[in-house]
Length: 339
Image (tube, rainbow, N blue to C red; front, side):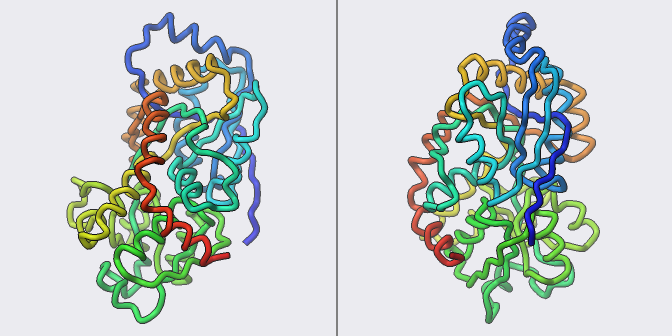
């Protein structure tokens, strides 16, 4: 399938939480972007979950940045690597940032993916917007209804994939930890595309953020098989959690994967980003995330916020990269299998 680069004029957004900046300090920080064009490069298609979150956050971030224009540009490709590589190569002074799953950047680097030309720990982390559970779903008409059903298949589990993104790597870890064969079929453009393949029966199942599959689950077009999280969902306690059902020898690996996935949708800037620009963006994001109107909108749309301050995230990324080295052999084998 052809990758189409779609551009969308909107505002982008981010998400952490330095929760008590006084108004004057915030105004001074936002002055850095006053009258400027800011570009947010979305690591996915216009129909994907990243874009839906960015659209929701956009007006609030624009308000607190004080920018002349906040432009949202869709940059799908490589499961987020195209957008990340673009940000990595930016020259000093470029008012551009990335919005997408940070987990992809960590995992691609651990896998030695040829598409990852960056060191993920060197990016400037500007804050996390959300960290929703990731769920493995199958088609509503599929005979598969449990992890045991997947394990009993007499063929590989067919996984439609948009490339070497976090879901591709997650499936590789699940296959290794739970003992089933996997066949990744790449070339799809975003979760909307892979979702349609699963519903039509062209693939067995795929992984998405919970909010992205909720409508299809409620309509019966999809069926949730497993959560890839550290803890069960209080709202859906009957859905198995991988960290609880994995064999004892594999619990450390799946826990590491679940922790990485919880970095989720975040904004990052290039390593060359000016410290004043970093501080201003983080402050604007923090203010946006506290806005009562945004909080009400996110609740109404079932796109819940889960902010993490960029400075906190910056330190956490270094520790995650250091502590998750056990994943590397599994991820490298997965990349080799599709080359």
